[in-house]
Length: 148
Ligand SMILES: [Zn+2]
Image (cartoon, rainbow, N blue to C red; front, side):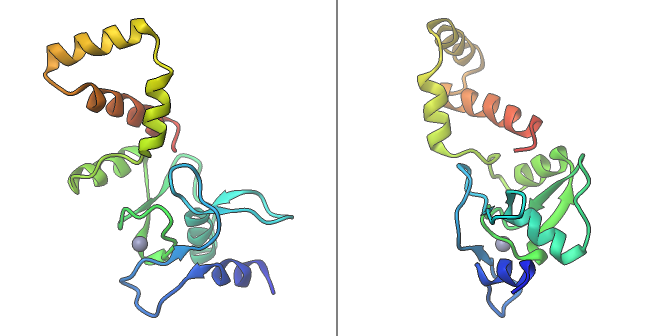
């Protein structure tokens, strides 16, 4: 079995191109399918699906994004190549927040210093936004900047 066969064997692939094809093995903390196989570099599954489908490596400055907003989905029909900004716009246009698991926000919140918490409270009072929303925005911006 070659690597491509191995890859698709680990996907819940349906005959319907409209449906999400979900990666069955491990995922990253933020829900993206993770390809881990000896002899292969560890990669996010949707990027691998894009590579298999197009036969190309995604350019370094572009991200493989999901039209379907479903991180473990590897259906090539649901993937598109975009900049971090495109991805962000796509998500905003759908009214969806940037990816970021609640668990991660909780962890970040637990690590804030008193000074940071005070700053967050002040910003919250000034902007009228919830502290959690401000924290989420800051973290989303950070994640996007790093292409996560
Ligand atoms: Zn999908």
